[in-house]
Length: 359
Image (cartoon, rainbow, N blue to C red; front, side, top):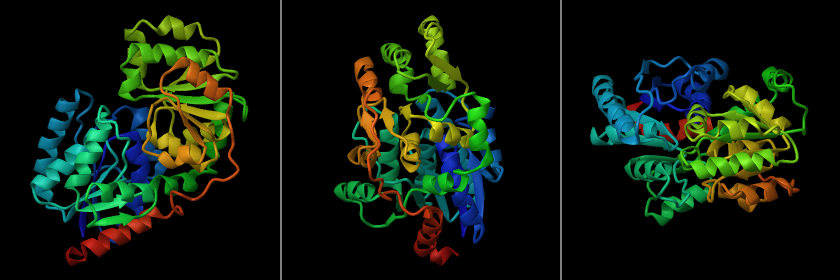
């Protein structure tokens, strides 16, 4: 079986690492990097540390508006699919890279397999929600991380080709949980276990909104412990553009650092008292490691983390963020709702079962 896998953003690199290993043990896989995340800290270092094969093709698309980025990827991916004639195209998550890969393949009548299918925030104002809904309805094989994702698809009338495989990010998390680099991260940034919050902010609803960024900065500045904030390039750019840099600089409680590698992120996450984030993937990673999470959004695709008490949704409201930080809890149970850490093998089995005629 010939498979083209498409990645382009940090969370997709993390998901692809174990899947690439599983696929290449049995089949021909070509890895395509769209270039959506293109600087070293957001891209190259992940390939190096996670042992992901170097991309067979790098589209080099880079940044741009949603329309520009998606359109450029569509043109390049269509040409590539015609040239390579894969049996199936594998896409991950909910980015513009996911949408472009799904659309280009579906229009050429190439089966699309979607890793992380069925997730819903039920907020159509999120570009990611549009991407995931469209790709799910284009896909031939829907690889769901949770039972809730399967239920979402059933509600939308999708039942054929649905497979519950578990969460592939758990595969990677377990693989690197005790890596030396995770311990070194605390030394590098001179923080003590349990002595700080780890923060990330990158969603457009926050990073492109002046009032939201201002509220988040004010909440972090008032935290009862230092906030170690790994600042996304777009967020850093907008902090400067909105005239908020002086506000941030005057907050002695906030320490900003550039984006860090996956294994360093794991180390900093495990050592933190709680995670403050608007990231989807990091909400799960916090759950994997038993770290409470405060999510700077009004909704989440990972409803299990909220239902089980490990995650609180507070939006970008200063008072709500502060209240959540002041009342961090560690629930007594943490069920294996995301599978057993062997999702990559389950994805391989589902692909083989669905497309055995192409093997």
